[in-house]
Length: 610
Image 1 (cartoon, rainbow, N blue to C red):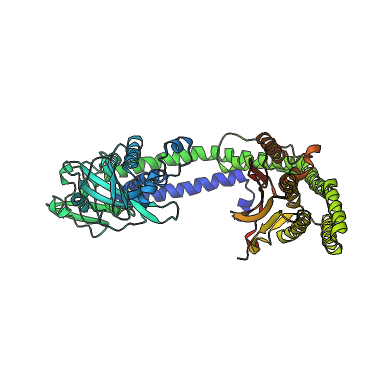
Image 2: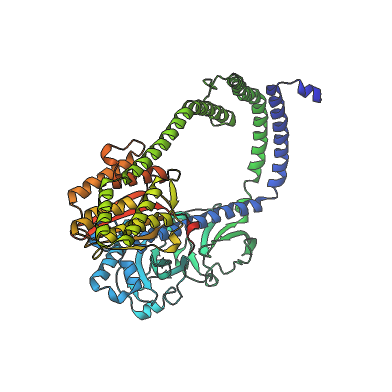
């Protein structure tokens, strides 16, 4: 038998397997369906009822959860920065009222009510009223007024605040005859994420009626809902709403088991229910047993007819189907053999369809295209990587060359000469030592990235030179916490910025100025600020400089223009090349007050040793 199977082609094996399995399955199905259906009418109802009631519960849970989610933006005021809401100033009024209702005046309370009424008008027409309750049990409602006595009767008023969505069953509106349900939605303070109040939506049963509608099981069977305390939430007979089930014509029902067969007035009824995880309500399906058993004879006859048709269809269709299955496989096999020879242009034929063979052909073609693309792009990617490395080295060399600045050398030598003439050797020794250290630091080409601590040490030496030049009035301070000193930074990122501050803020004022350096974290980044109290920048100059920095960010892969090889532009270019386009420097200047240059670098949390 095995040798016979081995000699068969794949097409023949598929035909034989399909026909054998299908024939066995059809015969077995006919026997089992006849045996099972006659005994499982009751179980079929339970399955249908469970599926239906669970689906209804699920739809109802989604409905309540969607309503709750639709209020989150309104409750939290997350649209605060929208230009329209910023003009109106009402996007966070709900949060303000919940924190301290006494600080929110009558006009703003009216605005809150307007927000609540707009929510009703725009989102859910079935909402009758909305109550906003704070932790101190102050209540603000969208329309009308409610006395303290009336509030005390509300099921949600006396209950403590809960972080979960809560649904309260059917009740009747005060002064009316409209059945309502209430959804209590927790509200959290956006500042500390603690619960600060609740939003209560008072809704009609419109959506529940739409979900269940005129749904029937059998001719007279129907679906209704009962709350966890035994009150009827929904029933086709509206006079039974909100009543305890034992006070209605359904008092004979026993709901101790999800599926049961119960008798009332000499007739048997199939009863099945499921419980909602959100509301705790029971969705119950009720139908007379005799209505579910009428399809047994029809099912038996149908099974015989279907079996005959299936056998005929299998004999005709399986050979055709087997041929359609094996043809694409053979074509794919030929395409794979061509690819093995190195022909990446080969493609497998693809016909419309979503079966596994067609998907495999599509995947094969995508793989061939991807391999072809990879072969064509690997070389260009390697060239681009080399180019980026060259740009980084070029920017570093330019930064090092910039340090050999005639302005710096001239001033330093002038200071050395003056001190030598006036004060003698000690100060000359100090200045010469710092200057030598600075130039030794800049001459080390092997390091691109150093610790922030090393960078600040060299910066302090530079500032000491400036202090010697402007002895009386110049002030400087480095406020950087020790836990940030292990952060890594591109070498010579801070000194050129401080030198700019000295040139444009300190020197014009003959030393009567200050330079401050500080650092603080921002998410996963570290911001280093260099501030001076000089005359600030002209608005046009500041705008031009910002545009130049933005141009460097967007075109970091290109070489710097000649005017971009100095000072701030060079530092920004090197930071963008090394860390990415979200990093670099930013400038804020205030006329007659000073300038602040911010340097953003990555801050690896493991460096933080707080």
